[in-house]
Amino acid sequence: AIRMTQSPSSFSASTGDRVTITCRASQGISSYLAWYQQKPGKAPKLLIYAASTLQSGVPSRFSGSGSGTDFTLTISCLQSEDFATYYCQQYYSYPRTFGQGTKLEIK
Amino acid sequence: QVQLQQWGAGLLKPSETLSLTCAVYGGSFSGYYWSWIRQPPGKGLEWIGEINHSGSTNYNPSLKSRVTISVDTSKNQFSLKLSSVTAADTAVYYCARVASALVTDRYYYGMDVWGQGTTVTVSS
Image (cartoon, rainbow over all chains, first blue to last red; front, side, top):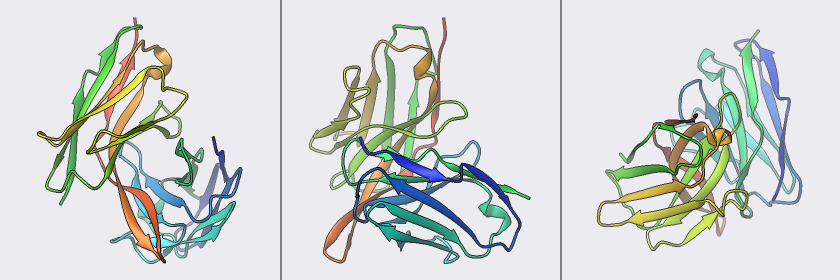
C-alpha cells in the first residue's frame, strides 16, 4: 500500500495567515491526489482533486499543487471557518490511502 | 442535490457482524463507485472498500477477509458487512460517493458526497 505522510501533524495559525500543508507519497502517484477538510463531528468535505483542481463551491483561497510524490495544500488567507483537520488521499492505486491528518488550530 | 443517508446498528458485541446501509437520494446511482470509510475515535480516516452499480468491488486488504460490500440497485442502496468485530472496529463509519472528473484527458477522483456517519461501538 502507498503510504501518505502529512506534515505538520498540527500547528497553530492566526486569521489572515497564509498556511501550507505538505503531503508526501511513498511512491509516485502522478496527480491522483485529493484533499479533504473535516470539522469536529462532521463528515469530510472534498476541497481539491487531481492535486490542484478546486471542487465546485470551494473558496478560491484554497489551492493545491504538486505531482509525483510531493504535494501541498495552501490556504492563502485563513478565515475562522478554516480551522479544521485536513487529509490528503491518493487515488493512484488500491487500497486508497489517507494521510494521518493535519490539525489546524487557532493561535 | 445528491444526499446519502446511512443507518445500522450502533452497538455490537465482539464476534458479531457489523451491518450498515447507505441510501442514495436525488441523483444517479449508476456511473459511480460508492465507498465505505471509517474513523476510529480521535484518529484518521481508513478506506474500507467500494462498489459500483454493477457490483464490482475493491476492498482494503487489511479488512478483506471480513468485509462484504453489496449493492441493491432497485433501491439505490449499498451496504457494508464486517464480520467478527472486535474493539478495534469501534469507529464512525461513513459512506461516500466517488466522483470522477476528466482533467487534461485523464479521469481523476474524489469523494464528493458523504453520509452523516454512523458511530459503531464494539463492547462486551
